[in-house]
Image 1 (cartoon, protein in one colour):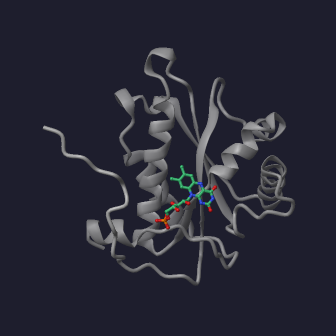
Image 2 (cartoon, rainbow, N blue to C red):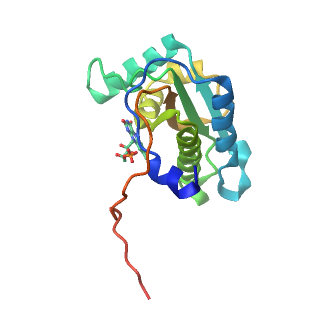
Amino acid sequence: METMSTITSRRSIRSYTGESISDSDLQTVLKAANAAPVGMGKYENAHLTVIQDPELLREIEASAAEALGRPGASIFYGAPTYIAVSAKPYGDALGNIDYANTGIIVHSMALAATDLGVGSCYIWGGTMALVANPALVARLNLPEGFVPCGGIVLGVSDETYAPREIPQRIGTDYVG
Ligand SMILES: Cc1cc2nc3c(=O)[nH]c(=O)nc-3n(C[C@H](O)[C@H](O)[C@H](O)COP(=O)(O)O)c2cc1C
């Protein structure tokens, strides 16, 4: 796809067949994560965890359902892969730059998924579930000092991508 076509085709997919994506597609998505810009080029402050164990996925979903007060909520929509993006905080002077990094890493993966025809959705609920449950975070075996900051589900979907009309929906001023 051309770049703007990929950008306008991307949307949140919330229906999955349950079938896993190919390893080749997964590797392409991970390459896109590594192509994302990060503040000060500190790639060592970001970490990806590919979670495909159905039991662990269900446990994260159960934790999210509890945190959200929505019993039975299926926050991953049946997607068989969740990639948690974790970050090592840079320190107070740089504020929430780790969350800025995480957002762009996730979006880079979403665009690659769109280009491949792989379903994807940014899932904040997964991060909520993890931070609310240190025992689950421990299961990720994150390097010392890393905290889950975001994540994306990936999977095969019957839904398809096509370029969309994008209205101006973000308030924009021209100053000066
Ligand atoms: C930071 C962030 C967190 C999000 N968390 C969730 C989520 O937990 N569950 C969900 O279904 N969608 C989630 N979304 C998807 C948004 O709802 C979606 O991107 C937005 O409504 C625009 O729709 P589109 O992605 O189809 O263009 C999230 C998106 C972002 C950027």
